Length: 249
Figure 1 (cartoon, rainbow, N blue to C red):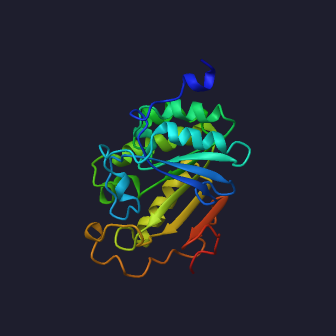
Figure 2 (figure 1 turned 135 degrees about the horizontal axis):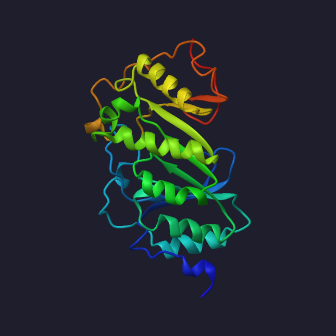
């Protein structure tokens, strides 16, 4: 048995809710396939992948199917992104990452940092992280519906920043859940932690659950103050694409 097959998880260990064969937006600047892991422990009202939340849902693909596809794309893709759901809830994530690295791919990870211990274990095998920050850390439950979720996110973010691994921190700006004042507080928290790469992405209705959204979800987006992102080394405000635009003034 070779090194690659020896770390390949079984489909019952890595629960796969979907696979994007080619993505140019899940890892900015890279051509990647995206593996969507099934299951998430938080219940964000604006989630656009709600079908991936239930941890007990039947996998849409077996890991062997996913792995066979990735083998066929060696030399054609830059990397593979593990997304979700929340990938770090998966017990087999570390072994899956090792298996895909064994094919020669670089590895990206989308996470909200809800399991710091497992995040720490897989982090040395990751090349880039897209880290979702939901709100000022004391206000996380407003978004996630889970008490003390901000504590876990903060612990994971500190691990990421200490690792030296490339990353992007990003926040979804929902007009009924985060005010301009919230966003200023969050910006200052991130700057104090040493975050240098930050993106704010406007909430989009597509794919969300109308019965979970606040009734005033259609109100205009909060206007960020002039120079909001100036102190970050890289700052992006995304309305509907990965294009970098100037913050509102």
